[in-house]
Image (tube, rainbow, N blue to C red; front, side):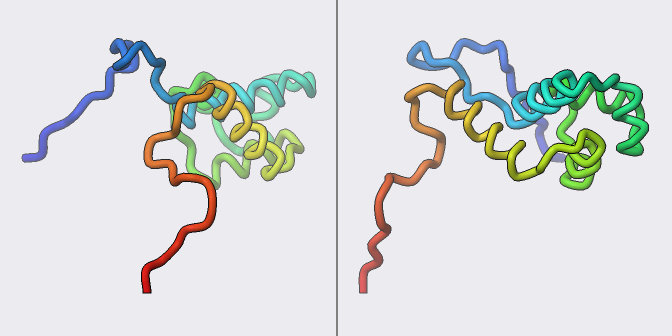
Length: 115
């Protein structure tokens, strides 16, 4: 049987660095901010998106990682352009990460292939 590995977000990161922000947390904060900017109530947005208010709340708090269909439903219910939302999330992740390199990030510049 496979072992279950847990990820402890409260663990002290190596070399005094903070852990990379989780996608679902940044997404949730962005969706909540968009809803609040528009003066939308959680129950109304959830109804328009076709999901339960509890599930939308969990998404906004970063507790659930929604599918692309759920993200599309919520952004549609909010009247938010998905590309703008994703661009804002990318900006927030970079800002939260600071100057630390991303895990698995490729160096800037062209990739040269050997012949």
